[in-house]
Image (cartoon, rainbow, N blue to C red; front, side):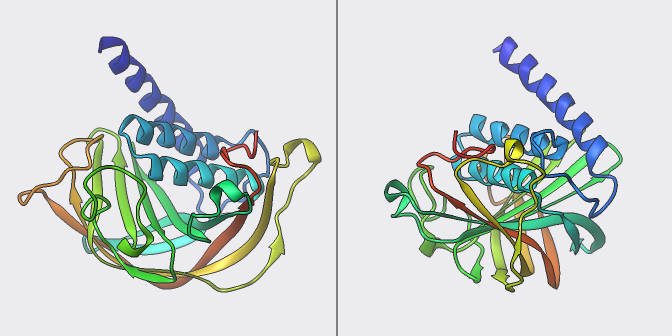
Length: 259
């Protein structure tokens, strides 16, 4: 247990350092490259979700890392956090598959990821859904165990603060909209060596709108809330943000493509 705690602390320090280096400037261009510090930060968050037995959110963070390596440029996302106006960087990544092994998955899963750094606190918002708009539900409220989210269950949302407080919040109510506003363009790639293998990439735009109630979980790695858990509401007015559509040709896509 001690070694696990030490590893978690080291990862948290690495993540804080990487985030401090890469999220100061909203909508700063990010090169399409394997050496992308923000993508590496998101991969660390993906590993953190695996430790918490949350495969869905781990996948979403890995897809976000892949989108960054494919060349998506984040845009400004404006919202209020418990009534306080805040400006985030963010984008939407939509994912689909062509392999028979993934054919049963609902098409065009889309996720909004937004982040900001305030002092030594990293704030991250993640909203995932299969339709243009849907009610937000607790991800485990309609199933007995932590298995794949059913598309009929609506949108899922999570909010994280990493720093001294180190808290996690889960969406328990509200509504989310993430709909494509087609503006197709090729994803940049400086050379074949940095192009993700087995992934077709297309830049586009998405219209978003959020009004989500979050409840704090029992601890950082928990997904359990109770009636006395503190709550907060995040609201994003209707706006258009950068997006990317990723089509995988492999059974198990990774953050660097089909390996």
